[in-house]
Length: 218
Image 1 (cartoon, rainbow, N blue to C red):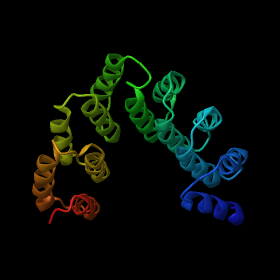
Image 2: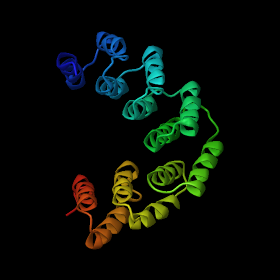
Image 3: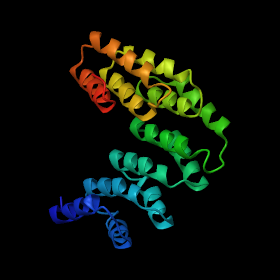
Image 4: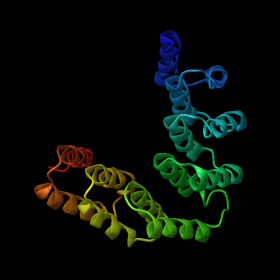
């Protein structure tokens, strides 16, 4: 890896105010041979806007590296447009990576109402995920449905705390970080405290503890 280039990206990352020159630098290096560099650039583009940055992320969505595509889909959540929305749904349908599918769906959920897309159609896609899949992407589907107003999805997320795969249980707890608000925080805290008592996985316990700490719960 080009250490000097990576350090420049770290410098941009830490800057309080990023400039058009920073964006130009990121775009110039977005086709670097090193996937770690491309991945970092996909992450950093979340701090910018404009069509050039958007198109760079859309291009990175087709990268050979899974993490590059994942972070590109994630960063596109701040570039709401019908063009981006349609591409995200296409990525969900065609990409072979579950991780990429997850972030494509979540970014689509984030912008569906801002771009005037059909919310009912997106809900139909999310319900299709529920019917056809299991594991982590199911967590994503329930999160999306909850954000789009289907409050019963919270109960389904609670049920997934009993999933056999500890990584899915971790994912559920992290989902609660995204959707916790004044309306549901007490219920979520109660469920997590109860689940923690019987949880065997150190990773899940640690994730729960981080959640409780963030919300100042003893």
